[in-house]
Length: 124
Image (cartoon, rainbow, N blue to C red):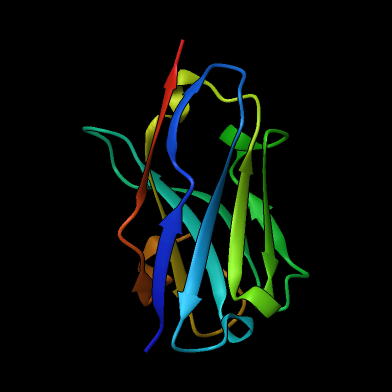
C-alpha cells in the first residue's frame, strides 16, 4: 500500500516562497499520477497541480499558474511543489494524493491515496 507524507509547510510572508515535499513509501511513485490539492478554512478542497508518473505531464490550476511549479524525483520517491510569490489567499492545508493510472487528474475523486496534509499560512 502506498503511503504519502507531506512536509515543508509553515508560515510565510506575502511574496515569499515555500517548497512542499510529498514522500511516498510502500510502492514506487513512478507508477502513480500525483496531485496537490488544498483546502482553506470553510472552503472546499481544490486542485492545485498534478504530475504524471513519468513526470512528463504537468498541469497547474489557473490560480497558481506562473507562481507554483510541480516536479518529482522518482529516485527519491518524492514530489515537490515549489510555491513562489505567495499570496494570503494561498493559505490552506495542502495535501498530496496518488492515483494508479499514472496519468494524473485534476479531480480529487480520482485519487486513491492521500497524505494527512501540511499547513501553509501566508501573512500579508
